[in-house]
Each structure stands twice: as structure tokens, then as C-alpha cells.
Length: 511
Image (cartoon, rainbow, N blue to C red; front, top):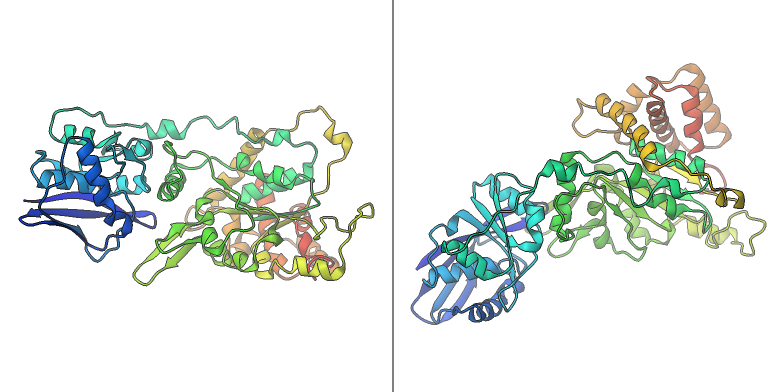
């Protein structure tokens, strides 16, 4: 008897429906074809044990299973449940006429219970597109898949529940989630709040500008000055995600298997990889390409603490994704593209010892050590960082001050208002949503300067010996400062403030 059941494979952030054809005939043998990997080939042992422990048997006949399309590589243990149901129906042990109306996915334990799978959300989206009635998957993944309206999503604890439902003996209630209610949960009490930070008013202002314009930022200062503390609080002042951004972000985390019984992600991700990270872990890849840290930070913040400690080649592979806001991973037979539109926040000590030009420091670094330390960060990477700010230690008077600082919620209101101005400005442009994404043409159009501002910028570039790369960056940041002031044009005060945020371009830093 020949039976067709349906599963799904995930490539990048999209799913492809897989038809599993099971044929049982005279003879003996178990033949699995259609480019399965080792995890799928080993499934016969898990299936046999699970069937025996639930009162069923592996047919003692010739079982041929084809996973179509046969030229597409299949990987992972998520097809265990698909194969099991196919074998039971084909061997006549269960009667399931509607089995072809469902997508069935799940990894089996030997007792028949189910383990979680990756990519439940893209699979559910594809199942709805192709007109399937429902989707059976492990209970642990049901919330992420139930985001998709118009598809019956059933969370399953063990294989017996699926069998009973398909035979009409048992009932299962589909899980439903009110996506909008899930999305609009209150975000007014962030875990990390700017009100916890004593002093550092100028740095907080800098963070507000970076958040308002989506600018990449680097913090330079000695150990203990508060660089990491400030960076961790940046997501709390970013504007709330739109529903489209939330779905995109949830999709990527679903593919990576990082959603643990969570539905729609409504908070921007904050990723902070260790400096020993490899190229592949940062940008994504592997023999079966998985999203890397830059894609996991999509629509959120990627924090690189102690930037010069990262291997130079690791930092270099970030240059193109920073520019294109997506990363393409190519293999011999296929290519996948992951989105990677994130805000880069980096921090570094000003010298190997951590103390630069500090007369009270017992440790000093020679000019040669300084040069070698700073040269790990290449010019082209710095080119893509709009704001450089020095962080100085907080004096005791500020630390011991009991006065409550401004909260993240208050700062976020100003940031959101500035972003709304930018959304309106760029609404006719497909890939530009905020100031940091402007190219040279847009800068000339939206950052036009009067004579006073031009003269101020010219004088600053000559006196501070700012590099040519700083010019466009200063104009972008000045445009964001103007948006925070709700000013229609960039004036000299905006330019003056933006000039302060280019520390690394001055003589004596990276010369």
C-alpha cells in the first residue's frame, strides 16, 4: 500500500513542503531515499522502539520511503513523526483518511513522546500558504506556530495523541494566540533601565541620538567607566517593534531553535557574543547554514565588548552585512540569505592597559603597544560606525547621589517621536527607514547646510584634523539631532554637537 504524508524543510528563513511517500510491499528491508542525512537514517531505530512501546509494530516487510523532492537535501530528526505516521497508515495499523491534509513534524523519544523542533514558524506560514488544514508538532513549539492565523495548530505530547486524532477516537483542541494582544503586551518596565545609571548624562544623550537615528556607536573608556552597563540599556530606549519586525525576528529565532515556549517576540533582541567567536558563528554558515549572531540581532542590538580583542578577520566579515543589512551564505547546491539589520554597539579600552593618558595610573602602554592594539580595528569597519564617544569614570559625588535619573520610558518617547519623523520622510523609499541608512544622495537632499554651518564644519575638520570619512557621518548624526529637536533643517548647533562624536578621527587616536 502506498501512502503520502507531508513534512517540511527549512532553508534560510523559508520553508519547503516535503512529500514523504511510504510504500510497503512483499519482502524484507528498510529503504530510505531522497537525500536524507544521518539523523534521518537513524530514525528507524527510534521509530521501532516508539511503536513497540505504544502497542504497535514495525512491519516485517519491505518498506520503501521516498522524501520528495528527491534532489533536495533533508536534515535533522524532525521527520521522525512524519515517517512513523506514514508507516502506520501504509501498513494498515491505523485508518487515517485525512492524513494528507496535515503537516506532521516532531522528533521521537523511544517512549513515543516528542522533542522540540526548529523552524516551526516558517513551516506554519508555508502550510497556510499551501492550503493545509492543520499542523501537528511538539507541544514545546506550539506557541510560535500558533501565531499563524487560519491554520489549526495542534501541540502534541506523544505519538498516541496524533494516532487517536487521525482515527477519530480522540479530540485535540488547536492552540490559538491573539497575535495583537501578544504583541502589545506592556513594555513600560524594562529589565535594564537608564534610571539605574548614575551620572554619564552626555553618554546617555549620545545613546538617545544613536537610538533615534539607528546609528552604530563605539564607546571608548577605561575599565569600570560603565560602558557595558550603558550598552545593555540601549534596547530599552529603542522604539517598539512593528508587527512586521516582530514576525521577522521571531522567524529567525525559530529557525535557530532559540524560542523556548514563546510566541511572538515583542522585545528587540540584544546579542553580546564573546570575543573568541568564530567567523561562522558571527555571520552564520556551517554545512547546513544556520543564522549567526548578526542575524539573531536583526531589528535589535549587537554588542561587541572589548572590540580590539576580537580576531581581525572576524570583524572584517561584518563589513558587508553592516552595509547591505543582510548576509548571503552560498554552498555548492544552494544559497540562503538571512536578514541582518542591526545596531552595532562596540566598546573598547583606549589602550592595552585600559588607561590612556592617565597620570595616576600605575600601568602605561608604549606607543608601539598602543598602535598595535588600535590597529586591530580597521578603517573600513570604523567607517561604518557613526558615533565615537569617550566614557569617563563617574566621580564619587555622582555615585552617592540619591537623585533618580531619567527613566528609559521617558527617553523612548523622544526617540519614538524622532523615528516617526524619519518614517514619514522616507516612506516612499523601500529600503530606507531611518537616518543611518541614508546614502550620499539623501544626505545632500535632507542635510543641506546654511553658510554658517558649512563654515563651522570646515573649521572643525581643519582644526581637529578630522578625516574625510567623518564628513557624511557628522551630517547624518546632525540630521538625527535635528529630528530630536523636531527641527525641519539642520542648523549650526546640530552640527556642533555632531562634531563632538568623532573622537577616533582625531590626531592622537588612530594615526
